[in-house]
Image 1: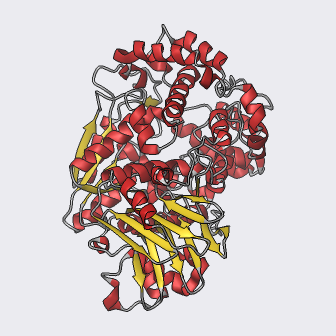
Image 2 (image 1 turned 120 degrees about the vertical axis):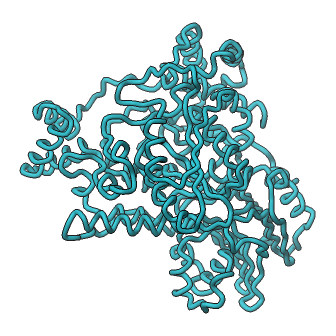
Length: 640
């Protein structure tokens, strides 16, 4: 993967090469295997290349194709190479060493602006087509790689990261108050409903699933990918669905292993990362390579306060997977010197923006740091698995059967669910009725309003969020099916993961790859009938059945407990709690931050938690309010 950058003049003025040097020099803080620049009079492309795939070693990038008169700079790993070779009629003798950027260029030569529709993988690229005097680029469907840009009447500049753009002399650094108001008003981990905006007024980003075209001074965007319900797969037996899943998933996992370097994976005690690891380990064994796994565990003196249905320390399940799967070098990491507080400043530097997921920040970054020490260049995960491979919420499915009046099927599934869980059928039906016909009002306490009401009125943020169906009170009163639909339709969910994976990968020369988020696996899972995901009262049924022989039954059939990461966050802050509280007292009186933040709520949260920092309050709204306040305040004070 790479950091790419470029300049384009919409008028007839030649490129200022010094400005290109500024862009590329700002990327020097990241490790690179090669750094190259290409330019003509109106366009400059740069690439800060990190070699991941065998084909990328010693790659010329940016690349100019003299035969086709096209230039490209790309941050890309393309996974459907074999399919593209056939479609593009690439000679067998040319396939082995053809780089992914050259493959994209061939695709553009054939399909032009339709090109992104044919690509599977993680990518952000720009192509200069001098014959048409056109600049064309795209970002992959889920925004796995970032691509920011600035445009005025005369100039366009783009880069994988924000900081190099802000170094250019013609770009002013100004706070985007609309972005900030959305960040503060949205209770969930979504940053902004505008997937093209950033925290900087003059810097935008190409949205996931979009291409960009600049022609005759005009800039247009086009959405090329829509995740939708596929035509349902119709197979004869349950076993055929299981085999079909294994075939697709194995193909997808293998396509993510294309590197000559070491390969690692996140590993928890659950089905998603466990499935990724089991298939990857088997494939790597054939290559005589070992899989490295990295697992977060709580610090040694942490006392688990979570309920019986949740597990803070997943080691018994993780080690069971490691032993059963084999060919694994496992790591159990407690990051004892790290906490949600200790990592704030570094995360702000990495991400170039405020963030909300402080609960997992210290171990996510810590795993990258550990993996880099062992020459890992590909790091697998199963983050999207809840919505793809391990989909299947039993009670929501039973509620859908009730709403459709499918009585016989409902009775059968309720019977098996009751037997599996040892729960009376009448209690099951009561829960199902509540799911099917939820009350109009909720007993949940609304999320405290962190945004200053006057700031909210000035930016009209509530109107905008209402238009995007964002509940500012943070009350979840919808079902799993509606949530899944939103996850794949609303692009604002995608930017978070792309920002994390791109920025951490650049810092450590590690490409994060998620087989559960591959377009092919999403399309397959959307084509599977819902009756395969909940079968005989068993939730997540397809993945449980399909991984027989791949995962130990202790993990595969576990429906009693689920892991919960970050539950020791407040416990980790014990030694720094006083300094945290002192900083929060100071912030609660800060007149500059009071323009944006609802200081009444900040003070209320501070009073509530100051002298009572119980470990179990780590997921409470009071602690969330304080951490978000601290993160936003530190960012604004440093950058504006």
